[in-house]
Structures are given as C-alpha cells and as structure tokens.
Length: 318
Ligand code: XMP
Image (cartoon, rainbow, N blue to C red):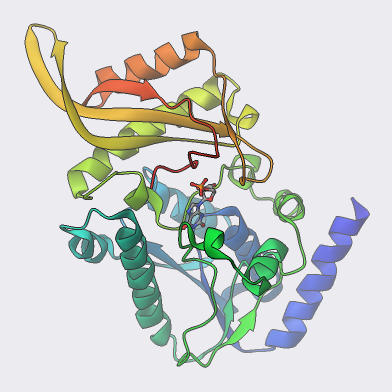
C-alpha cells in the first residue's frame, strides 16, 4: 500500500525534523493509538523517546507484562513502568458511585503521569496518540448527552506542563491507524484489539473496587477473551468483556455450598459505538465460557449473559 508507506516515511521525516536532538516522552497505555504513535516515533528518533506506562491496577490480566514484552523487548523501546496500583486502589476505597469513580481514576492518572513526566526534565515534547475523531470530539460543542459518562483520556495538557505536543496520528481515522500499525510490524492481534475504556476495570467492577474483585474480574475476562479467539469469534464482535457484580448468590460445588459473586458476560456489535446490539453468540460457546469461569475462577459461582442493546443500555455498565 503506497499511500500508507508514504504516510509513514513522510511522518518519520517530519518527526526527525521537528524533534531534532531533543527528548520526547509518551504515555503508553497499551491501546492501539498510543502504541502506534510510540512505534512510529521510535522509528524516527529511537532512544530519544521514552514511554511512560502507568500500571493502575485496573488493567486487563498481565497487561503490564505484555506491554513490556511487546514494546520493550520486541521493539526495544525505552519504557518506564510506573506501579501505581496501590495509589489507585486506596483512592477508590469506599467509593461506589460510577461518576465519582471515573473522576478519581482520571484525576489520579493525570497526577501520576504528571509527577512521572516531571522527572524527565530534559524532555521537550509530549507525544500523544491523538487521532482525528479525538480532535473532532474535543472541538465540538457538547450537549448534556456528551457528558452522560465523562471521558477522561481525551484532554489537553495540564497548564503547568511546558511540553510541546507531538501528535503524529492527528489526521488519521482508526482504520488507518490500524493499517499503519500493521505496516510498522505491530502484531495484528494487538492492532485489532477491542477498545478498552480509560477507567479500565474500575468501571467493570460494579460498586466499590478492591484488589480481590479486580483479580477475580481479570481472570474471568481473560477466559472469555481466550475463548473468543479460540472459536474465531473475537473479530466477529466489536467489544467483549466481563463485568463483576457486587451480588452474591448461592451455588453448589462438589458437596459444598458456595456463596460467591456473579459475573456478567457482555459482548456488543456496533459500527460507531453510539448504538449497539448484543452479540448473538452461540449457546454452545456461552456454555463453554460459563463453565470455565465458574470452574476456574475462585469467587464466581454464577454467570449471566447481557442481552441489552444500546440505547437504552450502554455498552459498559458504569
Ligand atoms: P458506552 O458504555 O457509553 O461506551 O456505551 C461506548 C464506548 O466507549 C467506551 N468508553 C470509554 N472509553 N474512556 C474511554 O476511552 C472512557 O471513560 C470510556 N467510557 C466508555 C466503551 O468501552 C465503549 O467502547
């Protein structure tokens, strides 16, 4: 694809010129946009780029390890991993209101990232994986509907940060970003991952979040995603995940009575994420997922499947 190769080589040249011998920092989330931006910039300026990866403790199972392996080992990028798990959990303690949880997670994220980036005193640029739809979204005048859920990861720079922005994907749509990613050698599986919300598992553990619930959810979610891949269903749905309800029910395991949490399996099909239908996954498949979750995840003894469309439900539960 010539247009794509053209974009990449032009952009690499431009980044080289703009950055010169200065240093760049980038917040790597593991998501498509920041990853593609990171690899592209790394191609241009190599070790002048340092990525900052914040482990909020609210990420998918083994996400931190995978990011370090993929981008650190495989692409040889400088990545500073910040373990902020304790900070996020302690700030979320006692909080069960969804909007409040989102605000706290957003605030803590900015705080951690801010503190970390200030350690890179010699950095001149802050790189971001901003893509064209983000640009549009932040320009549009928002009505009340736009704030049904506050999105925290689209935003400007904190006032006091005197870094210049470097946003090489600013003119691309998502599908173009993905193509660039594949062209740059990022594994397809990473480039075509389902979207993951900024507040992460913080809004998929319903109600109050604690370490144990997050662990339970990570295990269950991982099983669902594994099975989707195994049955070639991952690419057939737009977004799939597990939600953990703060509801316990009675079950039986062997001769023992159990009293454990309920997991909800959620899968949606959508084009624009504004409206969505629930995925008509095969019963046999759902049975496998349910059996595996209940048998393998300590803490869950019941699995339900979400058959709500958007609207009036939303894709996420909080
Ligand atoms: P809802 O739940 O509103 O979600 O139907 C629509 C899409 O947006 C994602 N989502 C978020 N993404 N930060 C994000 O980056 C957020 O705060 C956030 N909240 C929801 C959600 O996963 C779905 O893809």
